[in-house]
Image (cartoon, each protein chain N blue to C red):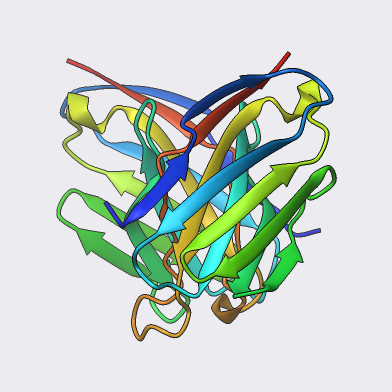
Length: 114
Length: 116
């Protein structure tokens, strides 16, 4: 079946450095790719998303890139801060986005050291 | 936070007992989802609903049933809980009919369930 692979599973960076998390997906019909941040004891929160008609999207220190040919997408966080420490999940829509269903990656635990 | 609440937030139960988790939303979103979260597996879809009384299975539906009698409530039932169902359960909502952000899923705070 369809799946989403996410790497790395853990990532430790120094405050101020950049962090990159990568995901690959298998369903060529996927056209919606959200990223979620989950803090300890809370539900996942959407931080940025991208649709298949664009290759890159940026929101302040966060950017996402999409390569549909290679079926991979990445999250880039610049100038990391301790409050960026959390678990990050990528996801891809099952088929076209109007199914409403998402497949999630396994998660990346990001630690930003002061 | 989107208007999503889950109850209970924590529950400890014994193997073989029935358990019902509740998700309540105030956003009038059409779609609702139940996920479980386990280390190394991310979030896996159990069941989802695309309208009142309209539900369908996700990838890990065995041992679970759902019901949706009102737009705002989505119930997840474990008919006979097993230790393998110890997990954190999240509810999510979306409304694919919304222009511009219909794909977006918003998550509740989660329910931590322990089956002894």
